[in-house]
Image 1: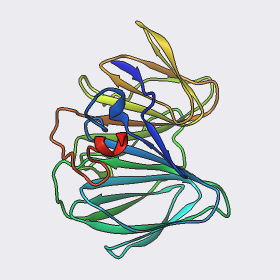
Image 2 (image 1 turned 90 degrees about the horizontal axis):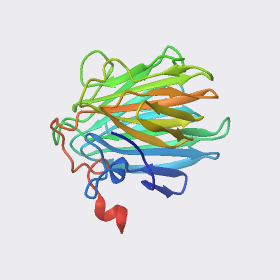
Image 3 (image 1 turned 180 degrees about the vertical axis):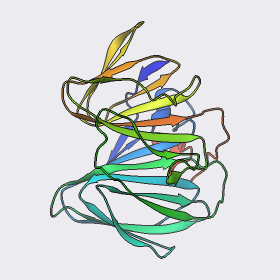
Image 4 (image 1 turned 180 degrees about the horizontal axis):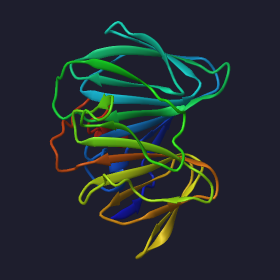
Length: 252
């Protein structure tokens, strides 16, 4: 399977929200454990007031600018750039975000992953990256095992890479048969090549679903990629507050 995602995004002010499942299903907003992907972008100060999350696992992948995070577990931290955050909201959990756009434009991803089970204990984890980018090599940021600081309760893996102009890559070795991938272009552009299909061109904020399909990824400019991998056959809770299935909301 190799399918570009079209018309699965909703723009809500400074946030553009991707519901990847709408590209491949009539009754799912997500794909496996991948619930939704928000792409916020702001050039001014913004406050997202204290609000709840329930049965969502949320990875804050903010690349430029800063965001002050405050939550009901007592954490107050500035995140962004090389400092990432994973909020595991099982039972209800509250937080607020204050976004600063004074020094540089704020931009990143807020990734809503479906948990393996409902009502797990809330947890907040921070990760300090050694380097801002991983050039021409997939970097594993989160997984369902102890090999990463960020650990999901579902069968989910997230990688990133900065693919430099003129280079070529493929999927990570971990991506075995029957796992489903969502490749997202955060910055730049990419071309997806497959032996038996026409090339697929992706611009910034575009994505493609890949399953059991050998591919090559090329680019003519430095490009930031994020790769989501999920096992659609594994147990997952699909009624999270944000990550859950919300067909009625999306189509209303």
